[in-house]
Image (tube, protein in one colour):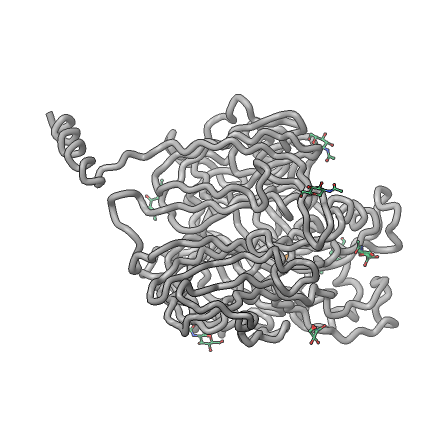
Length: 579
Ligand SMILES: *[C@@H]1O[C@H](CO)[C@@H](O)[C@H](O)[C@H]1NC(C)=O
Ligand SMILES: *[C@@H]1O[C@H](CO)[C@@H](O)[C@H](O)[C@H]1NC(C)=O
Ligand SMILES: *[C@@H]1O[C@H](CO)[C@@H](O)[C@H](O)[C@H]1NC(C)=O
Ligand SMILES: *[C@@H]1O[C@H](CO)[C@@H](O)[C@H](O)[C@H]1NC(C)=O
Ligand SMILES: *[C@@H]1O[C@H](CO)[C@@H](O)[C@H](O)[C@H]1NC(C)=O
Ligand SMILES: *[C@@H]1O[C@H](CO)[C@@H](O)[C@H](O)[C@H]1NC(C)=O
Ligand SMILES: *[C@@H]1O[C@H](CO)[C@@H](O)[C@H](O)[C@H]1NC(C)=O
Ligand SMILES: [Cu+2]
């Protein structure tokens, strides 16, 4: 009786669009190589469904997704749904050799998962080698239909802005070279907005993204940094932006003229078209956090080359914001004043000033405390690096440079209790403490060498975790965006220098800290994150600068099952790719 009453109510409400069932959102992703033209030259890139950037997935909170990925490319592929919790579907998370083996050429895998308890802008990208350079797209989760809308005035329109990088050379070739020589991945030749280089690059003015607005209306910009290795400053001439969400978590409205965004994060911001009708540049250029470090070759026997300010791509990409009412004009669009490349105060102001829209459930009692020092380092060249001389560049967390397994995914090894794939001894703190953020650590060679391993930190279901993330200055102090799979975490504090518990605690935000899936840890500084391990599975936490992930800047949490069937990881799906 109650059931049919509900049905009746629902049937009536449907007429008014109020009672919408969760839907199944289905897509087919064909991954293949394709020719595109940039810089007046043709180049083969790997894409999804012949689109660059790839297709946008739109769902409502509460929906189920089924995305069949068919690999018609010559490369191994896997796709990660960046920021999706994947509760009870860790098999669909995507990172190569962590939760699955790659989908080999000619094969397919259907990623099935629900989007529950999160809404806003996320994205998807390849999580194998450097294919993420062109295999990416937006994943937008709208509020559950008919329930509550946005916690801000409805915008007139929504626009997705995907920031990316462009290399003239083939990225797989560049990666193979970097691996063989033990050197860093090449910097990009250009930046892109929605796949377009923009007016300022040679031979590119027909390749400029355009955004047309109407005077007096407001627009929701869903900004995604899909670059492999570049943090961006993002600005629009003549306009301020109001940030309303980050990483698909609502924030207190934050007004700014500059957005800083690391690779991985997303920012939702409202743009009010309230300026003089004209044409304005939307611009993105790098935030290059790495300052030059003094170096004493004699005192540093391990380093083969002096560390320096990391080289960076010193170019600017633009799109054009134009008012419908603006009179035709022959003068170029208005350029915003741009921050300096190393403007850390501006980046930090943005990164550290966001707060959650509402007070949230940040854990107050902590079961597991970790202190993780991480950054770059060196490791002796290995036999499969024929072009390497002496030491190869490496990266580590608590001195462990993460090695990916090759024969089985870690999640499958966990599920089937296969031994010898990984060990459960990821250290809770560095074995050797040193003056982590002091640039002179470069003159003390033994801090440069890293160890190797495939180690997890084991967590019991529902334990609360606090991780102090301490950036080191080894080789180069740099802002590293650390991304955790399977969870959002609360960023309770961040700062520069070495973490000092007593000082830092005074400034912990335990009321409304920003909730993120990625934290850009300040250059030469630290950040403190907290989360509750209520999502069983194997979850990688890694630097979202792709070049650092491949050097080993990663570790994995192994989170045990809960007490009930609904908190226990089910067996892998039928079509799960094995090695
Ligand atoms: C370059 O690519 C364009 C399509 O993007 C195509 O029409 C043209 O034939 C290509 N040229 C060469 C030399 O492959
Ligand atoms: C990539 O970087 C290496 C090392 O800096 C350099 O020798 C090479 O020319 C670069 N390759 C390209 C295509 O830019
Ligand atoms: C970057 O390029 C701009 C414009 O070409 C130039 O003014 C600036 O000095 C360059 N900066 C660096 C660090 O190379
Ligand atoms: C905003 O950032 C500045 C540093 O750039 C800091 O001094 C200030 O306390 C921050 N405000 C909030 C509310 O976090
Ligand atoms: C890291 O491990 C390497 C290799 O075992 C060792 O040489 C180095 O001293 C260690 N560094 C630190 C800071 O623990
Ligand atoms: C997990 O912890 C929360 C907070 O202490 C508690 O409310 C919940 O019941 C716990 N869940 C389980 C399954 O233990
Ligand atoms: C592709 O994946 C298969 C299965 O894991 C593996 O055997 C092969 O070596 C991989 N190929 C490359 C180029 O990584
Ligand atoms: Cu990094």
